[in-house]
Length: 206
Ligand SMILES: [Zn+2]
Image (tube, rainbow, N blue to C red; front, side, top):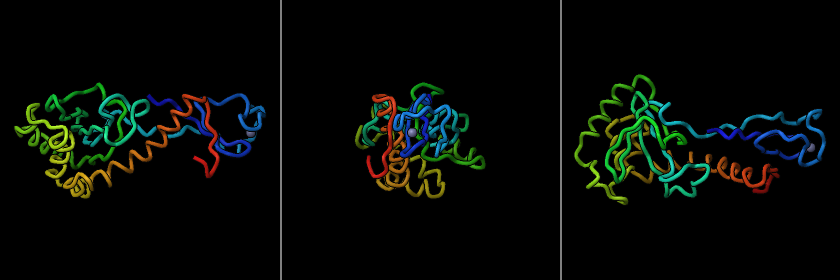
């Protein structure tokens, strides 16, 4: 899934690309004998596969994936994973559990450490038993994926995560916006590379 974005610095600004070119796109010198001012390194891929993160809160675009389809935080869908990495989500189809599928390119909002595992699973089970998570009671504005996850998190009583979960606005501010902002930088870089092959970052420019 990781497209493998590389960053290096040779004669000036940082250069981003998918694979190291033969010649520097700025000074056109041969890079195989070059002295780099910043050695090529892989830019960290910000996304995760939800099933590999037990007891986690994850988000992804409602349709498509982050790299190709994401434009703003209005289009996000939220879910949680169990201690075995099963994804639990609530949407117009009601409550669903699955092992794989469309949760392979997510942002991790938070993950509970191992002492919390049992409490996490038990609390999730209790919330899932509530009758209000049926397809019939789903409402895109008022009773949606956030309602389910935030209800669970409040009931979990897990530090600052649960505290923030009592207000959707606070939760978005503290847990979603910082992640989508930093992922947004990677996404726009990825799209530039897809279009132009490489990208030269001039300090002070966007
Ligand atoms: Zn150069």
